[in-house]
Length: 412
Image (cartoon, rainbow, N blue to C red; front, side, top):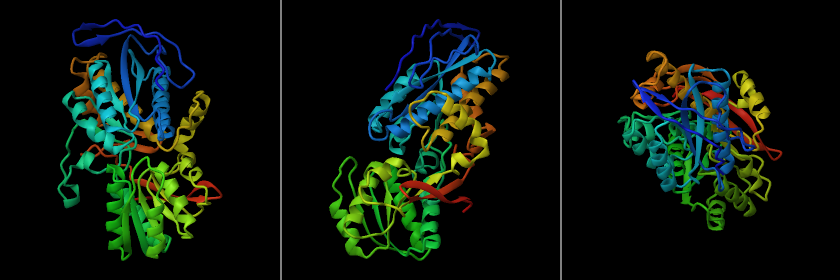
């Protein structure tokens, strides 16, 4: 849900500087006008995520975490003369909605950066819109390699499609290989049945996992596909049971993943289901009526709760009155928002304390040079706009909860 606050805007364009004034108050859902005496110039950071629907638990965590970054910047007067605010838009995990939201954010001249979206498939429809307007986009969750390295990345041909695209999340190249190595080497599984949801994220992740699993000497005994928003996966579950697989790898999200795990176990195949960060959510566990202890998931970064760098973020978030948890991408969303704030800071400092008339292009350029110690560790971007932080964690369901079992930095 988008909570709109009272906003009074006055635009004056003088010698390349944009001046606005804003007023309002914090709502009870974690949204805010964020006018905390930061200054006379207002800079908007857009947020695009699924704020309603089956993935809203993740989307609300993204929005709230960016909101917290903005509030922190305003409170500390991080950029002298600038007040930040957010505009959160709901894409419902639908690509067409994401594209419409991108167009809306581009149309708001006060937006100098966007955090989001959650889904790689949604991002595919947004990237071109942002690039045409020189508007920087930083995703805290997209993992499909093609978004930053081009469609031919799998052939070793790397070409950045859009200079405005950045992400604080590691790609599926890293995550898929990390998962395959854990399942084969650490869990000792040799025969895996691979399922995907036919979406950009799920199919791409499953393919990378499969290639690495086979390279290690494992066998992909069979494959199948499920359809998003469907609930009956019994035919796939029966195929898994008949295949003799000792494990399942699922490329997709937790609504389908949890049900798939449940229906596989109901066939009597008591084998673990593993997936990527798309299933790493409590809702994956609650979706299964059967006990799914032993199921596995990889997720980007180290557990936020165990990072010394995240202690203040967690304390501030808990004190912020947000009704939804920061969830899997909260720390990465805060860092994405803070990266935009730091880029704006650099641009303003380089222009005698004012926003230049080509602020969007300058912010995009500055983002590529951003480097700071964030919630999730060192935040910086490589020549493709990808995060330089390649930390990942494997989680296992134990006693109805996700428990971290292995964290490492992936260097391959």
